[in-house]
Amino acid sequence: MTVFRGVPSTGCLPADVVSRMERFGRFEFDPTGVDIDATAVWSELQAPLLEFAQSDAERFVTELVRAVLPVGGFAFFGAARTIWNLLGPDFRHPGYDTVRMAALQFFRANGVPNSRLSANDWQFWLRNRAQDEPWLVSRPLPPREIRLVPLAAGELRRVAVMTAEPDSNVVYVRGSDADGYMAVVEGRENDAGSARRRFDWLGATTLYDLYLRIGQALQVPSHWVAAELAPFVPLSAPNF
Image (cartoon, rainbow, N blue to C red; front, side, top):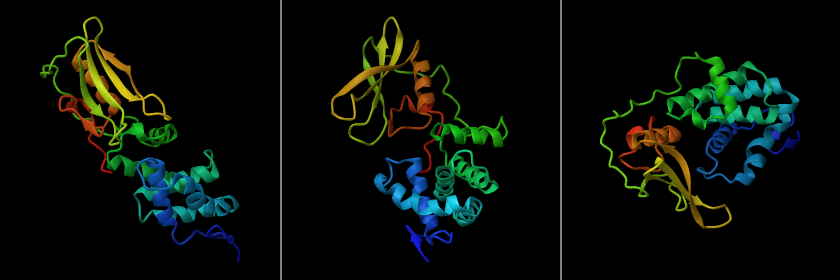
């Protein structure tokens, strides 16, 4: 019996398919936040399944879904993305719908904001769940009477650091006489160098409204959030 990169040509899944799906799911969710070599993702986690998937798609999906359903977690997402990758976005199968919805429910249960979903996954969720069912429930906003430390014209205040990386983007708010307040992002000019620059991002007439806009844009806390901005971030950090 010949073997194609770890999968017998008669059509069956490798014994470690669940761990492969779990690794692939983590990579697809956060490719920069996992210890997986991006150059090996296709050759190790996808290509070994290609012959089976394309020779007997119905059986491939049935067996893949059967393998990951008892395990759950990122294996759901890895399986759903594998079916998408190997069989195309137009492929239809009840098992695919099952594992795709299970992946989305896993993300929802762990507090992942819908901004982290692909447009296709979000539309799939909306088509298959009640339109008035919120993805996540936001925390109440602080009252407009909350005391916020004012900013002088041109003064910069750091309010968020996006990641733990030394070259992470940093968000400031800036006071202005004529235009109200502005959120300013400082980050690398380009991927090739270390030079940094600042650019205007969001504006508002009041500091409250600016914090509201920044919070809505972040959705969840970044690596560091100033205490004054934190109440305006509507969702808690995801559980992973």
